[in-house]
Length: 540
Image 1 (cartoon, rainbow, N blue to C red):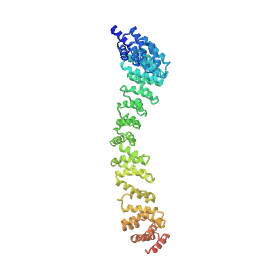
Image 2: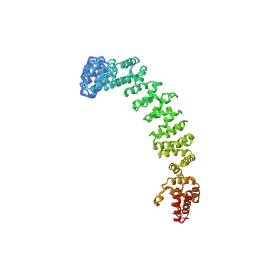
Image 3: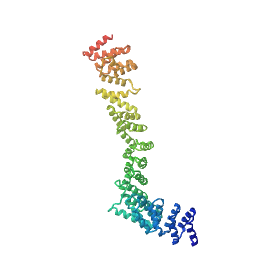
Image 4: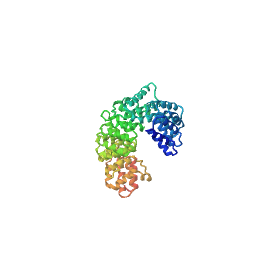
C-alpha cells in the first residue's frame, strides 16, 4: 500500500462519520503497514466511542502485531466485556511478549476472563501462545482447560506435519509423566482429546489403557473418541473392554464404543462375549448385538435371545422372535424359559409368543411342559393354565389322554381330591364323554361331606353332577354305578337318599342305589338306613 493511500486510510480513522471509521479500521487491519504512524493511529482508535470501531481496531493491532498496543490490549482484557476476548486474541498474536503478559494476567482476573485468555492463547496460531495454551491444560480450573483444548483442537487442521508431530510429542510426554505425578481429570481428558484430533498412532495404547471401567467416565469417553479416529481391530482383553464400554449406561461411553464394535467381525470364539450387550438398557445397543450374534445357532445365544422377549419395544421383540424361530436351539430355549417362568403373567407372555410354534415342538419338549404343568395344577399354581394351554395347542389329544391317565392313577390310589383337579379340567371340554363325566361325578361323591340335610344336598357339587348325568344320559348311568366297585355303601346310600325323594326316573334311580347299598353292605347300619328310606319313599 502506497504512503498516500495509507495516510488517507489513517485519516479516515478520525472521520466524524462512524461508518467510515469502521471501514477504515477494518481495511487497515487487512492491508495496513506496521509503522509508527499506523501504530499511533490504531492505539488512539482503541478509545473510539463506537464499539464496532474499537473491535476492528483491536483485531488490526493483533494482525499487524503492533507491540505498542500490548498495554491497551491488556487493559481491555482486564475490563472484561465483549471486547475482552478480541483483545486477548490480539495480544496473543503479538508473540512471546504478549503470551507472557497474558499468562501473568491470568492470575489476576476473574475465572470467566481466565477462560477467554486460555481460548485466545490456543487460537492465536503463534508458537509462544501455543506453549502457553498447553500450560493452560494443566490449570486447576476445568473451564480454563476446556477453553484451551477447544481452541487448540480448532487450530490442528492448519498445522504443518512437523508442527503436529511436535505437539503430539509434548502431549505424550504429559501422559508419560502422569504415571509419577497424576494429571487432574480435566487435564488428562483434554490431552486425550487433542491426541484424538491429531490422530496420533503412538497414543493408541494410552487410549486403550483409559477405557477400563475403573477409570472416570470423562477419561473413558475421551479415550474412546481417540480410538474412533483409527481403524482398530481389537481382540482378546481389548475386545472385552470395548464390550463393557458398549454396555455402559452412559451414552457418551456407549455411543463411541458401538461405532467401534460395528466394524468388529464376530467369530465362534468371540460370539459369547457379545451377549452382555443384549442386557443393555438402550435398545440401539441390543439391536447391534442382535445383528452380530442373532444368526449363530448355539444354546447359549438362543437362551440370551429368549431373555429379550419381554423387552418393551415391540419391534425389537418381533425381531428377536424372528431370529429364534430360525435357530435349531430356538424352541428349546423358549421351552426352557417357560419352564423357568416365575409368575403366571410371565408364563402367559411366553405362551402367547410360542403358540405359533407349538406344533413344531418335539415330544420330549411337550412332555416337560406337561409334567411341570401337572405339578403346578396339583399345587394350585396358576402357571399351570399357561403351560397346559401350550401343550393343548401342540396336541390336544395327547394332553387329554395324559390328564385322564393321571386322574385315573390318582383315583386308584384313593387320592380323590387330587384326581378331581384333573377331572374338573377335563370336563370343561364339551366333547368329554359319559365315562369321564361319570368318573368326575363319582370322585366328587367320594369327596362329599354327605350331609343329608336338604339344603346341604342341594349345594353339593357331586349331587349336581349326577343330576346332569341322569338328565343327559338317563338309563346309561345306573349300569356304570353298578360296575364301579370303589363306590361304597355310604356313597350309594347318600346318593340314593337324595334321588329317592325326586320324581319318576330320578326316583327310580335313587331306589336302585339304595338297594345297591344294601347289597354291598347288608349287615351294616347303612343297610338298615337304606331299607327305612325305601319304605319311606314307597320304593320297597
